[in-house]
Amino acid sequence: MMIIYILLLGKGRKKLLAYSIYDILSDENAEKKINLFLIEEPENHLHKSMQIALSQILFTDSKYTYLFVTTHSPFVLYEMDNVNLVRIYSERKINSISTFYKVPDAYEKNRKMLNRCLSEAIFANKVLLVEGPSEYMLFSKVLSVVHPFYEVDGIYILPVDGVGFETYFSILDELEIFNVVKTDNDLRAVTGKGTYSVLGFSRCNNYIGEKRLPTKQIQENSVSAKRSLYNSNINTLDKIRSDFHIFLSKVDLENDLDEFLHDRLSALLDNDNPVKYLQDAKHYHMVELIEKLSDTDCRTIYNHYNFACLKEVAE
Picture 1: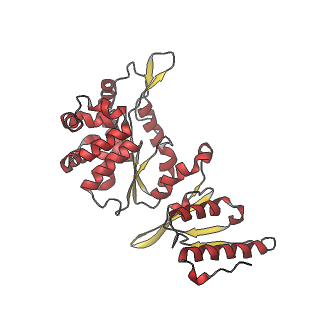
Picture 2: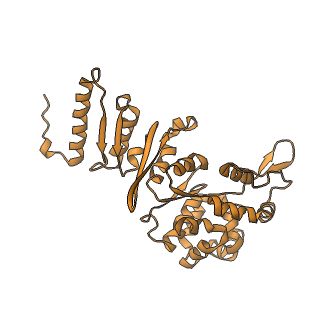
Picture 3: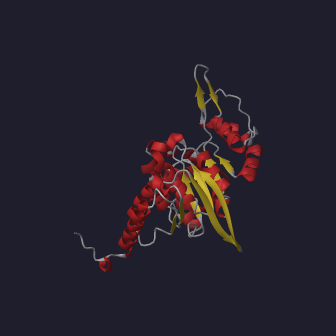
C-alpha cells in the first residue's frame, strides 16, 4: 500500500495528481458516456518540461478526443495536431477568430520543429517571418536597440529554418495575426540549360497568388545580376511590400548589409571581404558581428530601405 501525503506536495504535483484521478474516473465511464475534458490554463504551477510532457499526453492520447483547453503557454501546444485553434483578443471588446490546424504530412515526424515556433507566434500581435538563425539574431539585436520592449508589445521574430514561409503565414493569416515576410532573392540553376530560374520572384508570386513579377530565366548567377533583376522591378516589388507585407532582399542578408555598411563591417570584423567572412561560418560570425554593432549601427540598419521589414513590423 502506498500513502501519499498530499499536503506536502507542491502545487504542480497536486495538479498532476488531480489530472491522474480524473483520468482514472473517466476510464471507468468510457464505455457508457462520452467524456468531455475542459482544462483551464494547465500550465499553472508546471515548469516547462512538465508542460511539454502534458502536451504530449493531451494531443497524442486518443482518449482526449473531446478536449477543450485554454492556455497562455506555447509549451502546452507543442504537440498539437488536428485541433481547432481559437484566438481570443481584446480591442475595446472581446473578439475571437478560429482556424483548423493539422500538422502537414511532410512534417509529421518533425512536429516539434514546426510547432515550436508556431505555438509561440500565435500568441503574438505581429510576426516577422525570416529565413533562418542569422536573420533572427541580427533583427533581434536591432529591434532590442530601437524598440527595447518589442517582445512585450507582442512582436515575434520567427525563423522558418527550411520549413517554408507559407506553412506559417497561412495559419497566421487565418488567425488575423499581422505578419511580415523577409525572404532572399534566390536563383536556381536549370539542369542542362546553363540558365537560372528566378526562384525569389516565383516565391513572391506564389505567396500573393498573382503573377506580378517576371519569371523568365536569366543567364547569370551573381550578386550584380540579382541586384539588376531587383532594380529593374523595384516599383512592382515596392507595391508588393505595401500591399502584401512581403519584403524580398536585393540579394541576401549579408550582401544587403554590405551594400550600405561595407566599410563599417570591414572595420568591425577586421576583414576586407565581410560578406564572405559572414557566410563562411554564418552562425558563429553573426554572433561576433552583433556583439560589436553599436546602437548607431542598429539604427542605421533599421532605417535603411534594405531592411524596411523591421519598421513594417515595429511601427
